[in-house]
Structure formats: C-alpha cells, structure tokens
Image (cartoon, rainbow, N blue to C red):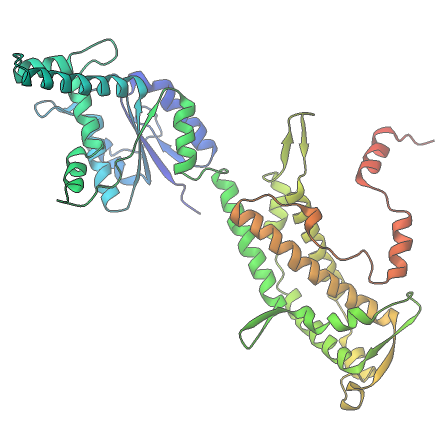
Length: 431
C-alpha cells in the first residue's frame, strides 16, 4: 500500500487552533497524513520526553507547515530564548538541507507589518544618532522590541523570522562570501485562503491523492495496452494498422457485395490480425473501469445542480467500448480462412487482385477501426491527464459506426441523440 505524504503543522496551538484544525481537515480530504500534536492520532514515542517526542516526529514529515503569529508559545530552552516551535523549525531545516523535507513558512500579515515598521523605525533612530541624538543600544532595543496587543514578545518573534529568512546567509551571499540559502521563502497571510492558495502551488494540489494515484495507474495501463499495438521499424514507430490500412481503403459497397483487393494487401492484413490477437490477450481495463465507476472525473454543473459527464469521461467510456469490441470480435477469429482457405498468403496470389466477399472482410476492418480509435482516444486522454489540460472529444477523429459506407447512411437515418433519449425517459409512459 502506498504511504500517504506526511505533513507536520508546526506552530503555537492556542492562537492557531482553528486554523490548524481546518488545515488538517482539508489536507486529509485530499489524501495527506497530517500530524498535529494536540490530536490523539499524533504519533509519538511514549518513552521519550513530550518535547523531544515532538522533535522526533519532524523526521516523519515530507512537508512542514510553519505558522508564526502573535504568540511565541512555550520555551524548549528559556535561557537561549529557544521556543518549542523554533526548535521544531531547526530540526525541520536540517531535513530541508538534506532534501528530505519541504518547508512552507507563513507569518501573519500583522506581525510582518509591525516587524517592517520597527525595522524602519530603527533606521530612523540610527539616522538621528548620526545627527547627534543620544540613544544607547538598550534604548533602541526597547523601542524596536516593545510588546503590544499584536505581539507579546517581539524580540523572540523577530529573531525567529530573521533566522527563517536566513538573513545573515543572504547578506553574505550577496557580498560574494557564500552560497545563497535554500528553504527561506516566507509567505504572509491574513486569511486561511492565503495559506491554502500557497499550498495549492507548493503541493501541486490539482486533485486529491486518491485521484492522483488513479491518474498515474490509468496512464500506465494505457501505455501497457498501447505498446502491443505498435511496431518498430528501423527506429520508427508505427501502429499495427499499417498492415490493414490498404485493405480498409479498398472495401466498399453493401454487406452482401464483394470488394476487389490486391493479394499483397490481404497478406499484410493477416499480420495485423496475428498481432492484434497477441495484443488482445493482454488488454487490461482495471483502471479504465475504476476511472468510470469512481466518480473522480465527473463534473458538477453549478447552474443546474447536477453531475455532468464531461468530455474526459465520455472519452474514457469510448475507449472502454473499443476494448470491449476488440475482445468480443477477436475471440475465435478464424485467421486460417485468410491464410489457407483463401490462399492469400501464397506467393502466386500476392500480386493478384482478389474478389473478396465483404462478409469476410467486415470484421477485420471493424477491428482496424477499433484499433485506430483506441490509439486516438488513448493519446488524447493521456495528454489531458499527464499535462492537466482539457479534452474536447469532438476534436478526436473517430471511425464511422460501420466500415461500409452504405450501412452508415442506413444507421444514421434512425440515429437518436442523447438529448432526445433523455427527453424520452423523462416523459415516456407505456400505453
């Protein structure tokens, strides 16, 4: 079973209680495992001190979300001014350096604004000192770090933010005395939406983890199914329909008619059938079925309040129907008739023009069309899933409903659209 990506939320609890809870709820809906120390599902070592147990939990995290607000919380080492949250950050940053954890830091906008204002005030005081004003370092520090309703320990908080920003390392790097630090991006926020938008970018949240796994499996399944439908010739890749294309172009008339086809084209057709028989034995539809049955790809139409089957779902459904058609038609298919009774593989017939009953050629030609559709549908579905782009099913060139042009006209005469069928179901009453 695939381990869920693990997120640790590091912050003081009292002033971020609701925000932490909301993040846990929504991120777990998306399939992440979220660790919060105040929840009973928080994994910890009961043989260790509670503070150190929290530090150990950092090692489980693929991602750490660090929230900084007006409170500093409890101290891990009061003498050094090291808070529990800051200690968690230090442990997390070691993993950031080792490329084991990704860090997302968020600072309340009010705190960031106060910090910037006080940095500005410090610069003004420095200018006044140059002009002869009398301020000592203690007075400057008191002015810069005085507590307020917005922040209860400005010095500890501001020093922490400076460490996260890696200000010393940044200054050295700009001066050419070292490398630029990593993992020092800081986001400011004033609402939950600000945080989640940043996480959507950082975590690449386009859908939930379950859907991401389904997309990955579906793409792999399509590759598995398509590979046997391709041939490689001197470094170039072609669909196996190159063996049947010429026959497809020659068939015409009604079901009871005959088509004249060169023996060489019929010989190639046998290669198509043989290749398709091998490929059909390994066709898999597990994740195609799951994609249609899970509801992960349906859309919600807000205007009418109904679930809508968009073009992606319709394309996947069409793909499944083509696989079903191949499996049904290829079973018990008598290739011997083409290779022996018809004598189409003999050298004397390869250059001949042969009069072939449409009744004998219609099934392999239907299989030809099905393979063409499988390749077209698979390519467009794969690109839509892999690149997260929209799919327009009307732009996909699909084969006609019959290989015989006369039958197409007959079938189209009585064709009923889905809209008409829906209207029928809504209002039909048996007489």
